[in-house]
Length: 259
Image 1 (cartoon, rainbow, N blue to C red):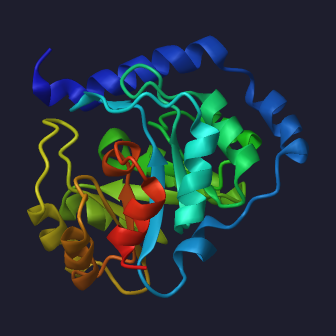
Image 2: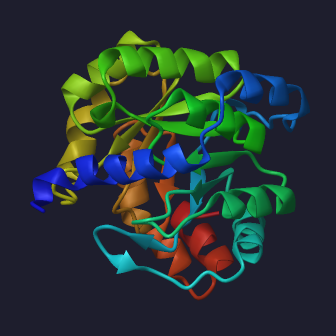
């Protein structure tokens, strides 16, 4: 498989996995009344100063295995103690070694809002996310058609969740703004080649309006990088790899945020 097909390959795997557990939408709608009360992701990321989305992440397509996380509950509790504002939990199984069980266990442990970090490519996954108690879901512009992006964003809002709309270039940023996305993630990793470039932050972040919450994603591992994206207009950073590899995530968070 060529590197240019990484995103396509991941989505194909996700669709296969979704097919195994999919249920009729009507059945999911009936379950909504028992869904957990949401915790307000937008509100958490709207606070003054740099905010942190700390990620529970075992592996990635670019780096392979990052950390053996036998106890995601303990890790997320440390993130909360360190001062994270939101916890991101990978639920994609094949490339990121995540699981829905991780999301459920983390949410039961902490009081912070939770991001379901996955490749959302079906309506089923949006209902599923709400039933699981996800406060925020990820919508990747590069992986969705124009109509899917519009429909999925609208549905997530109707269900009470927030959506982190992820972009990688200015054209995708325009698509995110066209659907009135309130939270836009700028990912410095090219999902087709997996290469990371800080220039992506420099090109996109200053172009986004102040009314939007801007989240800088990927490749951030130092206080200097946090300061750089803050100067470019970011309101929050999403950090996974450097936190799961940190011996003391509480200390690392305080160091990254200078708190």
